[in-house]
Structure formats: structure tokens, C-alpha cells
Length: 403
Length: 90
Image (cartoon, rainbow over the protein chains, first blue to last red):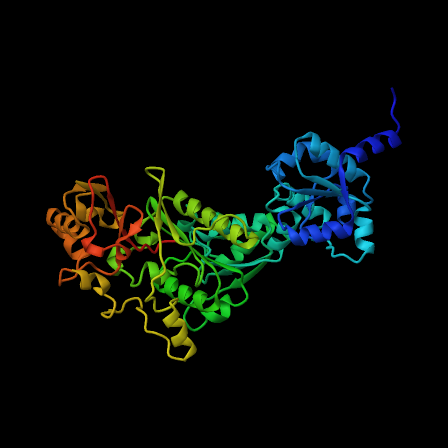
């Protein structure tokens, strides 16, 4: 027996639940857990959608819904332009075992005409849709996330072993503005690990060399060069306005200067350091997790902390750590996953092992504790240890009391 | 015997070992026994007054001993002590 569209529609309507736009809006307010699926085509979605909706064109519902809504008891409302396609889609979801599904009658057209809230999706050019298509396919990134990345500003301290891979991947990912702090020139001995530079750029400024590579990879990216050494005098000006800072420096002095300023400016700092076959990685999220001084209140003497130029390093080690820094940075920018804030990840290339240590905020930290904040507000910052200077008020510290 | 993991910068002072089995019932005892076995480690780990240098972090498994009972923290047979100095390289 053949069935007409009218027959099919009647059958479906008899089996599904329909809610008016007003009822859907009230349901959303009453139970924020309800999933809204927009089953229209992409060109319709681009003209506007209901805030928080998932875009899942009707032709892809069976294929993708289980990944996007794994819990079959989750309440779902499907909508389209007028309430026809969404009725069929709702029936399909019921057949797949989703227990609490409704279709919005009148569709997005009626929603809009009732003056209910809607949004325009983030705008990506045709070329950007192709370039970032693998991000757009990932629900946790999508067009909204990609637009966020394109609007983000990340500052990378040092175009060296850690900074090179970090900035390559951040540029490829479409982080719209990348600031680079480095006053050095490319040296032949850098190229064993600093993969942003090239042999024919030996002797050129690292910032300019990095800019060439980044823009060859992705012309969307604005590169801001800061050709100066990061010091207490300029750090506040340089880091202002950035969303995340990647610490790829190679001296304690710069690391402390950067930490202290990042805490004050409340900018997350993605930290890594390397030595031969080993690396350390964490995220310092100001006032939520520990800062660099909570972890290392005083710098070690120089003989116990040689840099790569003295001790050497397997080139791939900063490569791995720098890429993990890029990973943490992207998670912070997108607001997804769990960052390493409060955890220190140790990497050993010889064992191919990762070890995780728990970090805590030091209640007596001279930079990020409540007392330190109060002291700064009163114009009398607490004293903190500086590199190359004995700091007797900390040395011995709490260990002495228990000894 | 608990296991003490020696960081790369201190391995030369610890006979080139990456990890060492050391006896002791507390963090303080284990570190003292370690310094006795490798005397050149002593000046790197401890101050002249015999206290642990503040730039050296010690973790019992994944916990900073500063937030446990510091040197009095009990150490069991299957525990690992990690000596963690800051590293600067980038």
C-alpha cells in the first residue's frame, strides 16, 4: 500500500509529542538539562538558531545522535523551520530508543516571530570552513569554538625549543593573535629542536623568522613581535590583553618575573621546562590553583639548574612538552576538559613515562595568597625571593620548624 | 626499603643512579640515609644547619611532604620519594 506525505505525517503526529515555542522556552528554563536539536540544513542554521541548540541536520540524525546525546533518557526537543521535519526526526529518535522526545510545532519561524531569543552563528569564511573543517567536526570545538580561537590572543615567551612547537600548532589551530617575546637571533645550534626556524634564517631575528613560518602555515594569524627581554620593567605592558601566556623561557629570572606579573594580571600561565631527557608541565591558573612560587618558592643555585645551552637536551623533549603546552592552551581558550592546574606532569623520555604530582596553593605565597593580594592593594607588596639573591626568610622555611 | 627517585641534575652526585632503594621509617630518615650513602648529595639537599634546602621539593608518591607531616611523614615499604628540583630549560 502506498502512503502519501499526508498519511505519513498523520501517523507520525499520532505517535510523537509536540510542544509550542512558548512551552519549549518554559521547559528550557525549568530544566536546563533538556537538549535542543536543530535538524535544519546548514544554510538555514547560518541564518540564526536557538541559543544552546545542537546543529544536527535531519539527514545525519541516525548517524550522529548517539555520539552527541549518549544518554537515551535525556529529554530532547527537536526543531526545524516549521515543525514538519522535526516531527519526523522526533519519531526517528523514539525508534532509536530515546524516551523523552518532543518536536517543536511551528519551528524556528514561529519561535522568531514570537520574539524569543535566537543567535547568529559565528561567521567563518568559506576558506576558514575548509581550513578548520576537522575542528568543526568535533562537537567540543565546532564553529563557535573555532570563532573563539580566531578571536583569542596567546603570548608565547621565547621562540625556542618549547615555543616553536607550541606556536606552530596554535597557529595551525587558528589562534588569531600570537604574540612572541624574544630578543635573540637564530643560531645554527637552535635548529636541532627549534623547528619554527630554518637554516637559511640563521642570523635573523627569531621573532621575524617565526612570523614567516607562522604566516606561511596560516595567513589568518596576526603575529605581534616583542623584540625585547622580558623584565620587571616591561612585563606588565607586554602581557596586557593576552588571554593565555605560554612560558617557554630558559631562565629562572624570567620565569619568576613572568609568574608574578601573570598572577597580578590574572592571566593563566602554561608552564613547561626541560632538562636533557625530562620535562615538567603544569598550568598556573591565578587564584584558583598554585602559582610558580607556590611550587618553587626560591630558585636553585645556578649549578643545580643549568639551561639547555649548558646541559643539552634531546630535541624531541621540548617538542613534546611544547605541544602539550599548546594542548593546555587550546583547552583553556575553548573552556573544555580538565587543565593541569594543580597537577605537575613529569615526562621521562628514556622510560617513555609520565608521572603526575599534586600541587597546592601555598597559603603563605608572597604573590598569590590572600595576604599577598591585600598587601599589594595596600601598596606594600610582600617580599619574594629573587634569582641570585639569598632569601634567608624562606630558606630553611617550614622544614626547619619540624626538624 | 623505599624507592627514592633522583632527578637528573643530582644523579652525578648519587653514583649515576636514577633511583635508589633507601631504608628509613620517615621522610627525614630516608633522606638522611641517602645523604650518608652519597655524601656529595648532602650539600645539595641540605643547608649547613642540616635542613632541607628550600629549592628542593620532596614528594611522597604524588603528595608534597610540605602538606603532609614534612620530615616526620611516615614512609612505607612500597612508597616512592621523588626529589624534584626546579628546572629552567626551555
